[in-house]
Length: 324
Ligand code: PBG
Ligand code: ZN
Image (cartoon, rainbow, N blue to C red; front, side, top):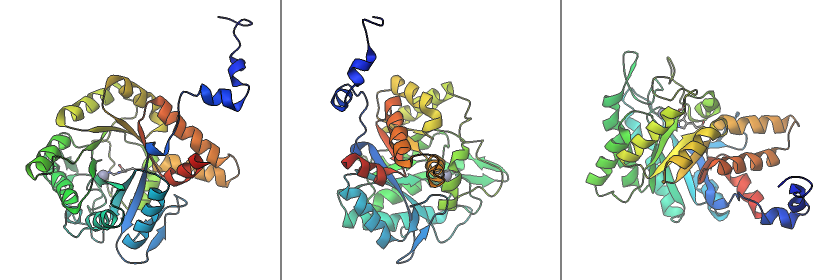
């Protein structure tokens, strides 16, 4: 039907019509809030490139997580900043490691809030890579056992879900097997399945002190130019036992989110990463954009592309907007 018989503006003329025909509705249920745990007491170190976010000692971490819980956010994604780093990332799988302690505290104080723990080595290795290093090579197979150890230590501490972000080949299978052998067959794996080698991670690396000390992550994270490869990565992780598939970053990769959504029948998560957050915050601070509106539009677009859930540093602010 063509103009003048059809007039799309008919159904845009008032808010009620617009609400009735809205195709995508962002909900607080879609949000996952990433938080950074550090040791100590009363510690709240602001992260300069991520206004509103801090490295938090467990007491503050619980307070912040409680805010999220009270706003109706179902889950947090927990990252740790350890006291010590070494070549084998031993503090990543220590019983009293930072994530293990923070997980216990969160599950103790807010049992109904889902805790998802990031499984990787980069915050814990002195060289800052996500895997074990052999010379200048990131050794895939030598890393798998350590990642499984990390996941198991998180499970023992009470995590509700593990999320491997390292991009080593075969890690989902290794983690699944280790969890199952240790009576944790109920713990789901949210796999960072298509994780691109992105400059949008910059602020996070400041927040988590996890920048690689030599080279870059191009030998394990995906080339931003590839999309067919994302389908292979995702299918591989599903075969290996992933329960939720994540695409990361989100906004520059909406096409990937869309094609994966159409390709698979598992839940799809998208990670609206640190740089995506910082750019909006910076432009807002300059007075160049309406930060809240751009935030809601961005999150809606990620959902429209096909994400069932969104990891976002905006989770608290978005949840507050959704209440209005
Ligand atoms: C590390 C990790 C990164 C992020 C989550 N886990 C960064 C990286 O790969 O260097 C990025 C999150 C963000 O930018 O918000 N495994
Ligand atoms: Zn890593």
